[in-house]
Image (cartoon, rainbow, N blue to C red; front, side):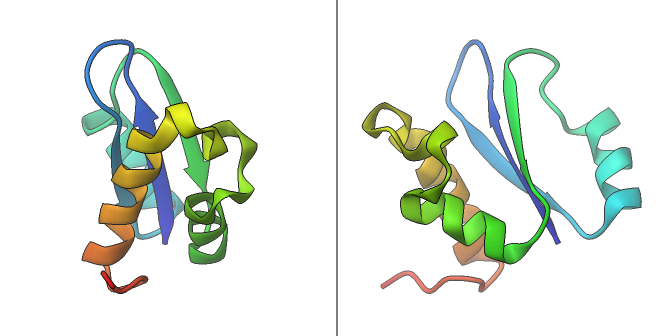
Length: 83
């Protein structure tokens, strides 16, 4: 799976996933926020590492909402448990 964290210029970050590159391309057209930044994690290991603070792009304390959005997505997909 591919995991995406979006940071729109206005509003809160959100996360979504795609099953594969084809699904990712399709969702980029239909789901992606047109403005702001987007971080793509190409597999589960990258997404979990990012949530755990190993991606400097979202590791700063000011990016807690982005990490939270990613966490919610990972929990929803049973990648992480909500302990």
